[in-house]
Image (cartoon, rainbow, N blue to C red):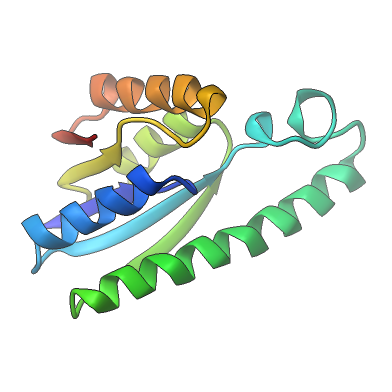
Length: 142
């Protein structure tokens, strides 16, 4: 079984990974982090006014994602498991669904919302959209 765990920097994301590791200890688990410039604090639209600004943002976002992946690997190690990691650039829900459609994913396990009020609204709608549009079962973790 191949399970996709989309993660942001929220505790519910960590809980989604722990739930995955507990429910499916023998699964192949991929942690996906979407680099969404709309959710960034840099510039109008989230990514600034110039291609150079976007390139700087993308490099920084990838570095920050690696920190998230390191934390995810530590959680997996607590369960004597290993995980794969990947990133996608774009709008969260769309990229998660595209990843499911373009890869051999059997199930998605995702946190029901993010850490801040804004991200709870955005990520709540992200998890809801993924649940509605993904062609595989989706488990929301609360």
